[in-house]
Image (cartoon, rainbow, N blue to C red; front, side, top):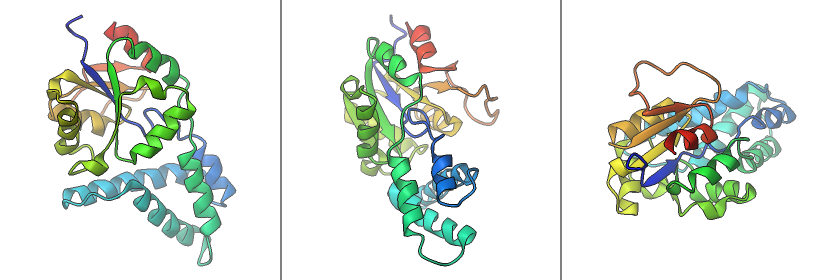
Amino acid sequence: MAHLPRTIVFDVNETLSNLGPLGGAFESAGLPELYARVWFGGILRDGFALTVTNDNPAFADLATDSLQRLCVEVLGNGNHEGAVEGIMQALMSLSVHDDVVPGVEALADLAELITLSNGASSVADALIERAGIRGRFSELLSVAEAVRWKPAGDAYEYAASKLGQRPGELLLVAVHPWDIHGASRAGLRTAWINRSGAAYPAYFEKPDHEVGTLIELAEVLA
């Protein structure tokens, strides 16, 4: 099994967590359901922008600030503390995708498993604890301890250094093509989880593996 990675590195937001329920939280707050995706995409955009200028912002700080401003923009001036609190609570209480538990169980028999998130490691901890798979992960890493957010190379190099491994011994698993691109450029092997059947962007480095679920990834690696 020389082709197996020594460690499998999981992205957390959207790769493990299912953001679908956020739409309902937005509707409960009086915001269009579609804005959930717009808001989350904006957090990533602003986080990437700050990374380029050598800042390393806290994901939750960006999320809360941008949500407060979105509420004012859509709902008007006023006290939106309840709406912000409800949506942030929903974000912190997400469940994993249906394929995550069986996929992680299968992958844990093949390699060491860790997470590497642009969010706080405590969020990843709570997510996989709720799913009953916390014991399958040896490390929960966050870019809060790295120099920059993913997809900057520093983030992946931080993970490799933390593990005492070479980048090529790691396999990054993510649903985001930008994450795949960054990891590939940093020397990691990559696996794109394409649950929606989307086309992969031609301008990013291609993944080493493309599968529909984590279960399929375990089958491919085994």
